[in-house]
Image (cartoon, rainbow, N blue to C red):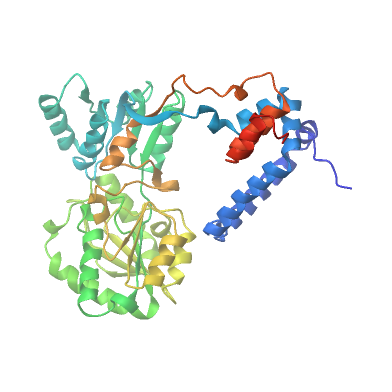
Length: 475
């Protein structure tokens, strides 16, 4: 004879430590199941949904009794509202109407201060909103340009540019907004979310993370493919605001045997493409320069530098720097670098890179230089990131037919192109009905005939429905 489930009172009386342990065990089991890939196959998903259908069929009376015990619902009402509900509105015409959210606040960032101000502004205005744009105070010239000119070219009563530092941002977040988009670092993002929660304001976060680049020497390790790949790595690491970009390559994963060849190619190509210091952007300010310099001061990290590493504090410049296998527990491998330092991490087999990426927080992007179809498939299916780009890097940001945004700690919410419009819109459901057709079986008083008719309609068994309606069948 089975044991009865614990009551709410019994659970509440349990020691808090036991409840916490129980919750942690559940969470651990769920994480383990998900990470194993068990929930991904289509067959598994279909089987679980079939299981729910069996539950409704085999445990119907128990479910009805539970609803009656909790809410006093009649069996027919329970079937109508909790099982059969979609068919109540037949026939009808339905549509989705996008409407503006209202007044939205956009925090843009300093590394692409013009593009990342205008891109979300376009979407917000296209959706019909009024907008406050708060440019980053770390790019003051661009912020002033926007403030001086936006009002002359757009409706100044509907679009405002507000300049200022953190104090101004905090003041803005004290007010109620209909949507907030923040682009920046996780530390400030947590503050934005905390402030937004006071008004239940929806928030979209564009953050970043450590974007890995998987370099498959077996398929791009020779000739023109190799040179093209190295060119694109340099573009995505050093040519995009000196690596100060959320989508920049953070580190490379490559097979141990091929690392010397890749490093040699990177060095020679850097000397050719970026020989002059003015070919690369400078570090944004002294604070970030000190942060990046500090990453290299760790003796174990300094010992891994194979190229570059020269620091020019006066001009806020850091030479393109290549490191080989810095300690994985060092700051340079646990924090987003956001600068011109490129660690190269070696693996025995390139397939090992997948486990390496999976063991870390979900990045904004995963890059892979490979022509291997099986490796491409595994990267798409077994890693999670805001985007995946094969045989190039960073360029996905410019494709306005693709959504741009993170997942997990790299952010949430997507924009670009039509996705910007959708981010700043509310999808309002509109249902229209007439008066010609009316299903009286949705109304009490209840009887078994009405329940049977609802059950037949739910199962699309129209012949049985007609027979029951005519009183020719009792079930």
